[in-house]
Length: 170
Image (tube, rainbow, N blue to C red; front, side):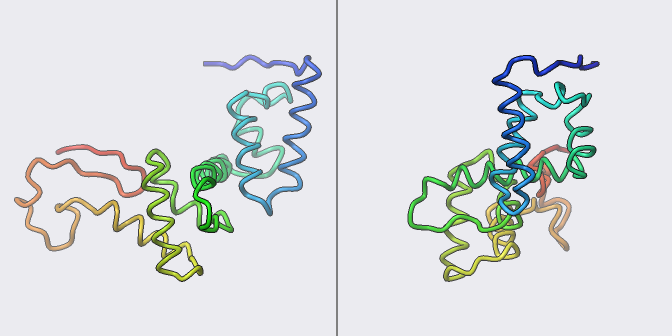
């Protein structure tokens, strides 16, 4: 499906697009603001008004980012938004920490629980590796994916991708 080019004819859209681009330009030090700005540009398709046919084209040509990196920034900002109401527990201080929680982004309670566990276990010093271990513990591999497991143990249980959560049988 071809996307038609739109112009930023409304002053409010031009102004907002400029503001969002300034956030990104200032931003790669603050991944949350960058992710939020990229999400809004992508969701509102503001990149079309700047002459880009796709979001991937926009981030590649304007910011020299791969689309996958831009989407990682977006997902990391969603994680921080989920964690923001926690209160006393510190938020992730970098994108690598937040990125490890993104497989759980569709389960906000799991995101909060895993982050809290990682902060408590690390006594305030949280690494991406520690978070990854907590996420893996919450999302164990199916029996057939476990090395040495007997094939009959798995039965008809679905296989679940540890990265994205997609499941299948067979």
